[in-house]
Amino acid sequence: MRLFGLPSVLLADWRRGSRTLAVVVAVAAFAPGAMADTLPWALIQAYQNNPQITAQRAAARATDESVPIALSGYRPRATGTYAAAQHYLDTTTRGVSPAGPNVNQRGWVSVHSYGATVTQNLFNGFVTANRTRQAESQVSAARENLRLTEQNILLSAATAYMNLLRDTAILDLQRSNVEVLQEQLRQVRDRFNVGEVTRTDVAQSESRLAQGRSQLLTAESNLNTSRSSYRQIIGVEPGKLAPGQPVDRFSPVVLGAAIQEGRARHPLVTNAMFNIDAALFQVKIAEGALYPTLNLVGRAQKTINSTANLNTLDQTAASIAGELQVPLYQGGSEYAQIRQAKETLGQRRVDLDNQRDIVQQTVVQSWGQLLAAKAQIQSTQAQVDASEIALNGVREEARVGQRTTLDVLNAQQELVNARVAVVTAQRDRVVASYTLLASVGRLSPQVLGLSVPLYDAAVHYHQVRDSWFGVRTPDGR
Image 1 (cartoon, rainbow, N blue to C red):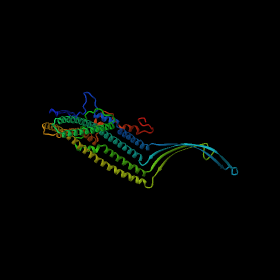
Image 2: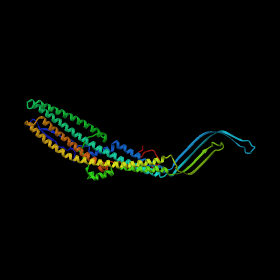
Image 3: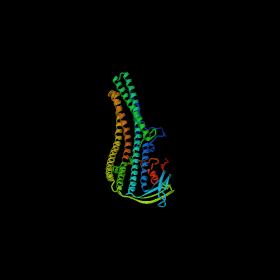
C-alpha cells in the first residue's frame, strides 16, 4: 500500500446549494518526473551519516584491540637497560709479600653498563588462553551492540521520515480547513446581512475559525519539530518525501515464530550470550592465580669500568634460567576474586533470561500494534467516508433550516478529525512494521536490501589481531 494517497474532496458551495470549496489532502504530490526522497534513501543516509552508528563502530574497533592485548601473553617480553655513573674509589690491598707494603688506589671512575632481558612465559595457569577467549567473546558482544545501534537508528530514521510525512499531511489538512472556515464565515456574514441567520451564527463561525487557525499553528510547530528530528537522525535536510512502504514481507508470518526468532536473534539476547561467555572465562582467569608460573629468562649485561676495582676495564655477563613461581598464599584475595567472578557469571545468566523476556514482550507488543494499525486504517477510512456523507447531509439540511450553523461546523470538524486519523493510522502502519522487524532482530541493511556499502566489523579485527607492533590504526591515524 502507498501511504497517504488520499483523494481530493469537493465540498458544496453554501450560497448556491452546491459546495465548491475543495479540501485537498496533498501529501507527496509531485509534478511528473520530479525527484523525491524515498524512505530507503533516508535509511541509507542514516546508516552512513548518523554519529551514533559512527561512534559505536569506533567502540567496536577499540574492543578489537583487546584480543592482541590478550595474545601478547604468548609473546616474549624484552627490555633494555643503560646506566652511567661517576664513582670515587679509595681501596687499599695487601702487598705481594707478607712484609711488603700495602697498595693504595684512589681516584674517580666513570662506569657505564647496558644490558637486555628477555622473558618468555612457558606456563601461567592457562591465563593467556582464557584471556584470549574472553577478549574474543567481548569482541562478539561489541558487534552485537553495534548491530543493536544500527537497528535503533534505522528504526528512528523510519519513524522520523514517517513523522515528517504525517505532519506535512496534517498541516495541509489544517490549512485547507482554515480556508473552508474562512469561506464559510464569509457566507454566514452575507446571510447575516440579509437577515437569514443571527449574530450567534456569526460568532460561532468566528470561534471555529480561530480554533482552526490555532490548530494550523500547532501543525506548523509539529512539522518544524519533525524536520529538526529528521535532520538530526538522518543527517541531511529533508526534501520532498515520497510515500513510505511497510516492510511486513520481511517479518515472520505468525506470532509464535516471531517470538522464537526474537528470543534467539535479537542483539540484546546475543549480546547477553557473549557476556556469559566472557564471565565464564573470567572465572577461569581468576582460578589461574592458583597455578604455578614458569618463565624462561635470558639476561646479558656489559659493564665498562667497575665500581669495585680501578683496574677493571670491562666485564660481560650472560645467563639463561628457568624461573618457577608457586603461589602459596596471597592473603586470600585470589579466592575472593574467584568467588566474585562466579557471582558475576550467575548475574550474566540471569541477565540473559531477563533480556529474552524483554524481547518477547516487545515482539508481542509490536505484533499487536501492527494488527491494530492495519485495522485502524480501515476504520478511519470508513469514518472519513461517513463524515463526508454526514457533512453533505448537514449542509443540505442547514440550507433548508433544519440544521444550525453549529451543526455544520461540528460536521466539518469531524471530517477534519477523521482525515487526521487516517493520516496518523497510515503513519502508524508503516512504523509498526519497522518496529516489529526490529523486535525480532531483522532490521538491517541486508534484510531491507538497501543499496549501501555495508560496514564489516571483521575487517578491522583481522587487521589488528596478529599485530606485534605499531601505533598507527589501520586507517592511518
